[in-house]
Length: 113
Image (cartoon, rainbow, N blue to C red; front, side):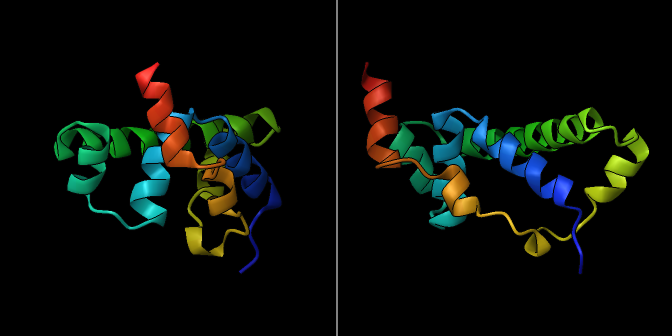
């Protein structure tokens, strides 16, 4: 399935714009496959807090990707249709986009400052 390269570009940009905190939560949950409770323990918050954070991040990413597409001149309705692609068809290196050197260590050090 051909995916609009503008979607891939906007997705990369939206992921890159996330804070280290947000990248950590996404990477730990989705890429590392850690359960909500474990992510919550790492961060010292309840798992329901992590669940709400993930929901909010998904909505924010969608909004930012749509905004990026419209900045490229794609009409809102068309941009929404472009977003209806199966994410498995995207050629976006999510691991690279969310990674940073020693993500967990960096995040936890930032928290202690």
